[in-house]
Length: 230
Image (cartoon, rainbow, N blue to C red):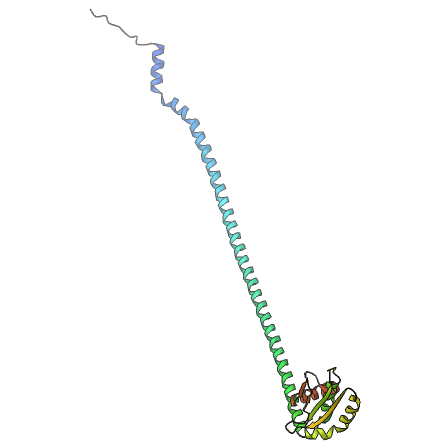
């Protein structure tokens, strides 16, 4: 025979168990509520971080704009400095060119004045207006008073006209040189007026037409104050 077991239709524990099976979601819901709080807190923090990131992005954009402006301002300043330097160099070059041109013009004016004076002197000499004998006497005096060792006989060759003009000077020169050397004035037709040749056993001294011009120019500059002639 089978032994049958019978359950009680009512038992307090059984009822509680059934009640628990009927309402299991409530306990689950009670367990989920803390997670919702955490999620809410995270969302709040994320929102705050998003706002902070937004503010930081704005600040970065502003700084980048300032940096761009500073770079642009720096570039403009460098360009101005370069332009100023180029302008300074340009002005300096212009000034140097002007000074060089003025120097050349001054030199040209000086040369023109010298050439003009020489041409006038040549005409005056050819016209026998200037006293050539004075320049000739000075030139001879320079030679004989220069300390050159003149001994023995000295031949002095002159233009025929000069030979006649400075004869009184030659007589005085002979008297002063007596006992030191002997001067023999001689005529040489090929010499121009103002030219002479001094001949000794050791020396040969010539004075040509150009030398006469130079002497007269020097005399005029010293005595009449001509400037820029040399």
